[in-house]
Image (tube, rainbow, N blue to C red; front, top):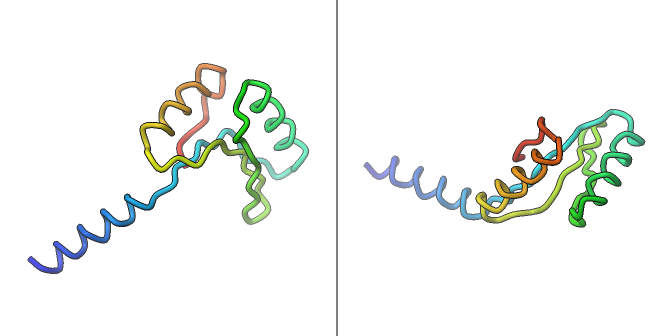
Length: 88
């Protein structure tokens, strides 16, 4: 029906404009986030950054428009020992 079709189109549009990031930590203490950031960057992830939301300092990598690219990044980070990393 028309409502279901419109909903599907909105979901497609949301997915089309999605940005995927890989999160490798969230800390209340910014110093811990900065230490994690330095470590991540030392492994060649130059696009790592800290995003602060509601007092939590989130260490994230990338800004991927294609989820498969974020998944590849995630796989690489997990191989480095960041077992709790996830796509945000």
